Amino acid sequence: MNTLEVLQAGPMLTVQDLGRAGFLHLGVSGAGPMDRPSMLFANRLVGNEDGDATLEFAHVGGSFTVEQPVRFAVTGGAVEITIDGERRHSWESHHLRPGQVLKIGALRQAVWGYLALSGGIRTPPVLNARSTHVRSGIGGLDGRRLAAGDRLPLGVTEAGALLALRRPLSRPTGPVRVVPGPQTDHFGDQAWKAFLDGPFRVTASRDRMAQVLDGPQILAFAGHDIVSDGTVAGSIQIPSSGRPIVLMAERQTTGGYPKIATVASVDLPRLAQCPTASLVRFHSVSQDEAEDLLIAQSQQWAEALASLEVKPENSPSGSSI
Image (cartoon, rainbow, N blue to C red; front, side, top):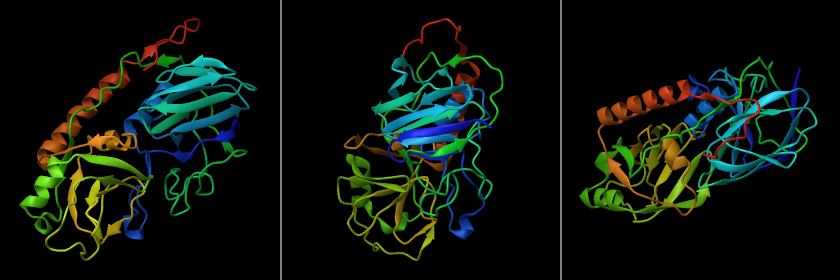
């Protein structure tokens, strides 16, 4: 079996697939990628299935080597990639051969990056998924972040062409869309005006569980404590500090703070990729609007995935995206 060896590990380097479903009642949220479309593109670029496991990293990737030839792709944002010192580009696939060292540097204007390898990472599934849930200590490799010296099993690399995304991945722009609630009755007109007027700054208090925003203080006239109820990815909790907390992939499954709104699924990856100190504003939409936006975006992604271009084997690496 082919093996990937981690020579140097960047921050928050973990194994992630599309996540696990059906275990919220056990207190286990889905985990999975912080930026789902970026992971999907990484897998497609190397000929994998959408659900194959990849590596996710924050800010800096690290360095890696393999025992047998593979194709690889790095997505999430623009980033310096080298093989034995020779530059490669993100958003397209390349060969990595035994003895060569793949180095992935720092992302630019993005936070979360993805390394997909042909055949996918084949760590044992836990609760029907390979995704690492660090706080629960399950999935991936022993339920933890990866470190130098770790070795990960890879699936079989099938014959396939090198592919490239020649046009930048289209992402939404403008304010982050949110759906009001579920505790809208805890917030008055003044709180809603402050929430929608913003702006809010993305703080360094962030990880795969949640990210904290700084900005206007949001006060709940009905109090900042509720009987704990369920959360979803994108839930925006308002604790007594008045600082919004946006819940992410490894969120707790229940919470006792009122939730003023939920980030629309179409915009959650974009918010996750906002660098620390970025300014964001929110815009309220209905649930029906949020669903229509997600359907339209999913269609755009499907068209982009279907239009990946084959790279000539002897061509230059191509342009960076």
